[in-house]
Image (cartoon, one colour):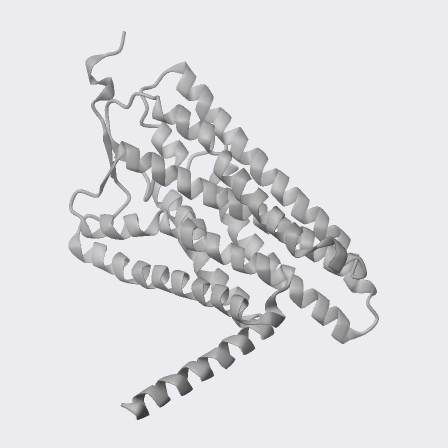
Length: 321
């Protein structure tokens, strides 16, 4: 028989945010700047890739798809962080929490799958350049991207559905900056099933991460020897430069994700939990547009071209007035 207070908690209160007005404003301003930059930077990449015919290649198709996912990945958490910083209560409803967890993990898993598909694309481009155009067709690119999204949006459903059935009693203070599986599960009424499911969630996340890392690692095991066998230094540099951006994003994202989800029974302090969460939920998406634009000559040139055209257009509009 359920105790009377087991269904009382229909909202959670985030405990990791500063409660002083000064501390909240100090956190709010840089977070708002980062979120604006993420959305604007990724929209620029998507637009530039769409407007330039010479960028209509598999690599840039995947980059623009990743940029699209990054916008929704950050939108699932950062706007709520911003409102929580300025709110006195800093709360989220149970349904809102479940939705946030679902969209955060579905877009995150989709990104993991897409980064794996991008490693496969780089492997084919460098190791099988003659067969690459016939294998990596526009149709296959679309199929791979859709498969990544389908995988991402289906995988978290069982966990979310199960968590939605749990009773939450006692404290409703969530020791985190957004809703995530383990912090929420710790607030469920303690029973043997919940403890077992926490371990199952740990294992599921570990398997997802390890499989993706192994596939990407195997791709680069094949890529590196081929690059080293290229005779000209310019050829080696060009081949390696196409992989650097992908590898950098991979290391940034997976490094912080592994710290959070490959710890099993290990626990961190609230401070380090918050730092690690910020690393993969905020900082990694912040650096991605920089990595894919500043390190990519073709995207930089395309941005300069369209920026120049935009300035000429505005000057002409101003003169007409």
